[in-house]
Image (cartoon, one colour):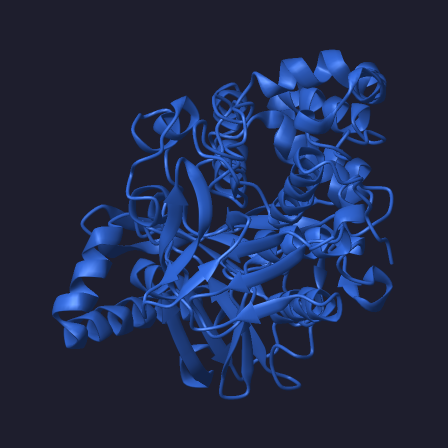
Length: 501
């Protein structure tokens, strides 16, 4: 029997995950990638002696005790990845004041009570929630679309002991939690460290993952993870075509039949999967001809919002930061003007000293992700005035270096490398339509919305990745790739198998 041909658009983690699991299950898959490398947003790049990790600050699912570990382990031999586990999630500093968000729950509780005793009630609510979820294992094995009655019953049994607390904490956003805090510095620190719109449940889970060592940083960074998945996919017999930008998805009689590349080359298939930018997929590749309620909610209403845009500033310094916390938020002595919609009052700095591949011995790679909300400004500036675009990047880099020098001392004279990615950079290299590193804002209003696996009225077409879901981290998009493979196997009457390492 001839294998069904599947074309996947985009060699990001979700695209490679879906293609890999389909390849394991007897499909003939082929990926078409617009860039000259795999990984999509999960990428690294060299600048002199420094390797910039453009993606990973942490990775969830590093331990078998966490439910998404199996999705990684089906693609990578996780025993061959060395993870760094930090003793705190981050620290927040304002002059002489500081708060450490420790990974260990007992240390976290002690720190918060010591720094903000007047917020004992809210602190107890947070800590009791973390302790309640310390042994939770979310039912992620199968997507709802493939579950039978017993699967749903078993999933309910898994979460039943935690259900009441889950429902309560999913209804409370981080902002609503912060609004009840009395201590001004704890209020500010929590707001900086955790996303306003996310439910407090997600913050509690973050601390659970930290405490249980289920979330860490992979030495070698983004390029290592992406290259390992790519290698595994090719070993399974899969093929990736680089520098191949898809301009159109071929449809006939409401069925996806293949793709047309920008150079005019045509490739036919039985199934088409887009793991590419969502808006480009719907409105360019499919010419806006196929939309259903789920798609309209995402792209034509105000229910879903794209993530706030940032710059990605990388600085290599001849200075050892290994004694500093790996991630520090600090309040600026002088605000930094970025664009017409953005003035910075704080900076978030991450160093990679635990990873010897990031910088030479005794030196440090620092990354900063300052907000830059006017993405169209950067896009238009690069297109119309490349010289001024570079001047503006340098201006911001100089101001950030000044701020780092004020905060840490002895920085300005030790800078060896500067690299800045703007929203225009992300549009160029990944096609993300608003130049963000992630797709949708994570909000309690959208977290339960259905995944846009397909479009009603269009057969043999599927979507995966962050634009299909509701944002989420690397483990989430790898899981979505696996789940989509399960859905396709069910629709094609193929028994799904997941080959574990």
